[in-house]
Image (cartoon, rainbow, N blue to C red; front, side, top):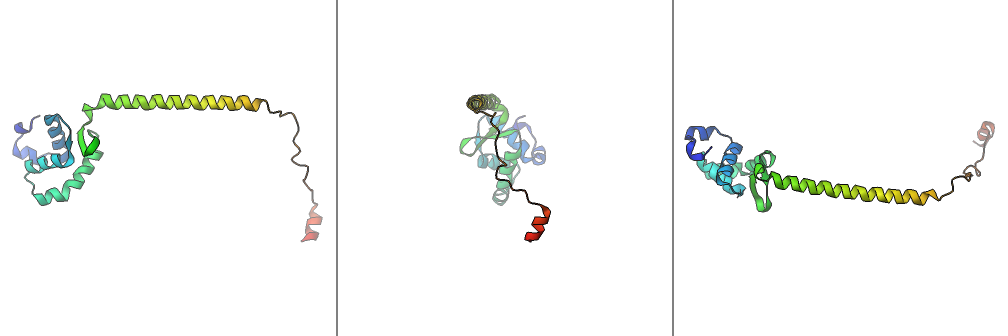
Length: 142
């Protein structure tokens, strides 16, 4: 859908996020929040005061809308234009996690090998210092 093919009445009924989607789709490049919102304000005949009052809400809308992705230096683009890159990053994260888990397992195996040599057959005399007190003796002491 091209902006030029949309009537003024229809533009006024579209939400900010739908307009942002159309703008980014049509431009085909990343844009800053302020650039996108300026175009939206022009399309919907909003004045400078409305721009100032609503720019923060527009930013929040972009941040929470799943169709958009925030890039470096405050630029936004359509997430659909970056799906391959995101999948590659996820694959790299997964690969790093697998390597990390393999290292953990290796360390655990080494620890188990080291503890095999400990002789657990000797009885431990943890109770050698234990003193048994009769209830009557306890009452006498109080």
